[in-house]
Image (cartoon, rainbow, N blue to C red; front, side, top):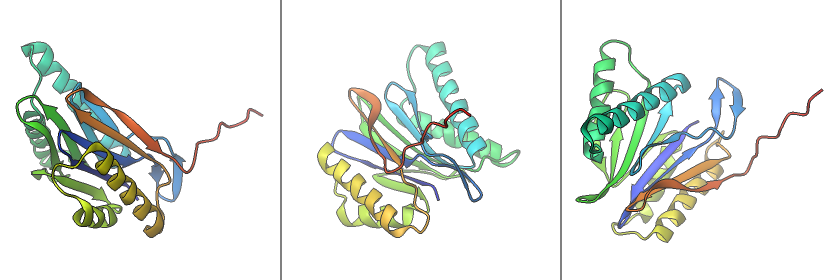
Length: 204
């Protein structure tokens, strides 16, 4: 029951994801961070099979870093999105990754942007996007309340509305979410929305 969603505001982009690591009917942990910081001004949020998600996002992160190391300049958000899409398209014909991605970034020339990339290598630049079962509710909330030029406070309020809707409407809703933001000051964690904490196991 994964939920990943994001939106673009006035001079920033914000991405939120559930933090549940689930296999079949089991919840393994409730603090799995599914939003990776690609570089100083990019975030990649992913949903899908756990192994594919971790392996593919780490592969993209290391290749983005390698490009910057070799060339002395970072990839733009559009270039990183197109590289990610190309790798998914190549893998699709060999050993496909079941992973859906929202890539958010901030560029000095173009400002904030958000890219939607699904597991069959579809790429779209969007103002708002979502993946997973929670997308039914988060997209509906964003269609109703989103407008261009939102402030950080308005965007976070909308993210909280989406989280509350997912928790109240989804039959097996993830309890915890992480929110990250990227703007001219860089990519960073903004907040957690927790209703369940992983308890430490007492030693026997």
